[in-house]
Length: 259
Image 1 (tube, rainbow, N blue to C red):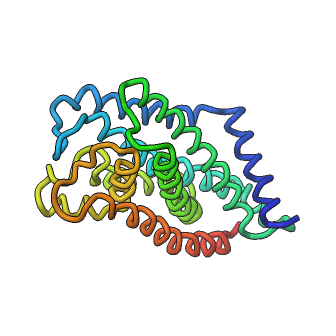
Image 2: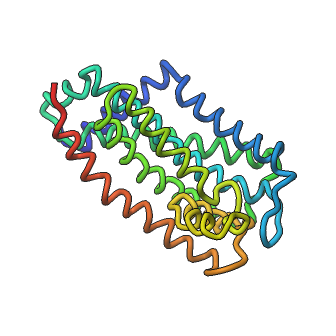
């Protein structure tokens, strides 16, 4: 069996688990929707977007990017659970390529992320968010979001294989929450203290958030420094760099698994 075919079989296995037990992806989606509603309607009236514009239009692309980052927790937890229960070792004993297990997880999580993006976009349209540019730009924004998710997947796979047990979940939570909120996903970097805004502006998540705002035709919250359009290149470069780092680390962690 080829590596790609074996990866597709494992993808189907992971998707079948979600069909039988949909609570994990469902609660993840509900959590993203809750954050959108809380920041959009509870705190949104007190937040001003630099350069003007509706806060919901600014927030929605940021929440889409943030949901791609939060997905790393489910990836790490699933990989850690399979490794802890010996399922990964069973896969390793089969005549399949060593990359098949990771590819299966990547395929399943990307499919889940695509559905999550669709639901969040439809929800955003229902609460007043609008796409101002054409469908080609909107498609480009969605592809950038999935590219970020692809890169984050390899971080989750590496963490799940390296910190089996409850340590994987704790490690991801410590990683995701500071990175997720120390970004421009929810507020503009220009509203932060100078040093903090600089850190937030160089966050990989901020690059994707700014790029998707630009492509959706929404307010970017950027009035100083380089134009927002430069974020598109960063939104491509950061995920490629993260993938180049964590994909080999994930492969190495997989090879080092022991009974």
